[in-house]
Length: 268
Ligand SMILES: NC(=O)C1=CN([C@@H]2O[C@H](COP(=O)(O)OP(=O)(O)OC[C@H]3O[C@@H](n4cnc5c(N)ncnc54)[C@H](O)[C@@H]3O)[C@@H](O)[C@H]2O)C=CC1
Ligand SMILES: CCCCCC(=O)CC\C=C/C=C/C=C/[C@@H](O)[C@@H](O)CCCC(=O)O
Image (tube, rainbow, N blue to C red; front, side, top):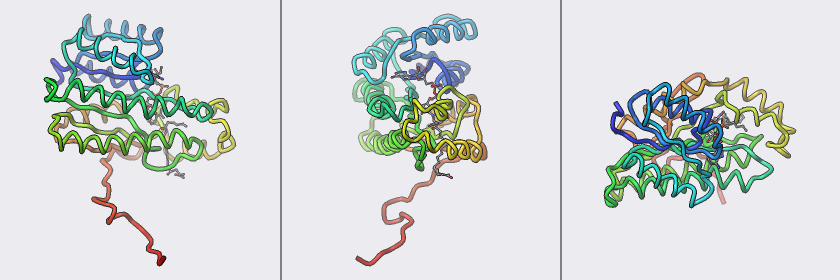
């Protein structure tokens, strides 16, 4: 289904990003693995090479918070695979103490990756069109009290990506932009929920964290990867938000305009 297609996945060295690469490779795509972790990234590339054969993957060391790194990642991908069709802006962290770092990766990194992807794929630039999937979270749909900055970045990814999907459609860029909102997933990032050095002043809410984990359950990365595959392959989807939790996978329906927002009127 994805034969001949070229994908870029950030945060590809482990967790959800690794699963996203796997399902894209399984379906015939060639994949550039971008990650700041060079050791793990090269190991994953070797694993994929054993599983899918040579010349299907390329690991590129890239810190999505650095402009030159990210531009270099795109340039090396185009040089190796002669173009890009799919971009998954997945890299993300939880660090409520170093909150500027969290914003620079989770939000600014997604903005950077979306702009680079559009420059590379949009038809007016000689691109062949394509699709961008930005990874938000259930915390992009509602507040996650133990991680307010993380929540802010994911809400930012939601607003930015939905606006850019409209921009892409209005300008005829030929690039679809969709958003993935998973619930808790069994990856290294989830363990930060219980680490005081990552949750900082909000570590006091660790009981709420535990109850939220109980309430929402924990998904396997491969389940979320199926959601990525749907957003990549369903060409009718642009500006869509796919929520994936233990109970359901569903496209979020938003009010058509602010006039339809559920509100309680007040007299001023
Ligand atoms: N694990 C979970 O419960 C959920 C995770 N997500 C989101 O999914 C995405 C992936 O998270 P996980 O796979 O769970 O985390 P993870 O910690 O297992 O993997 C994240 C990957 O991103 C890489 N990375 C970190 N900073 C980077 C940077 N500056 N530049 C490039 N790569 C960088 C890491 O080296 C790592 O390989 C994140 O955006 C996260 O917010 C969303 C909902 C739930
Ligand atoms: C800090 C660790 C983050 C782990 C990575 C995630 O993105 C996990 C996101 C999973 C669940 C988020 C749930 C957010 C729920 C809110 O919408 C709100 O409903 C929470 C209010 C408390 C409650 O639901 O009882």
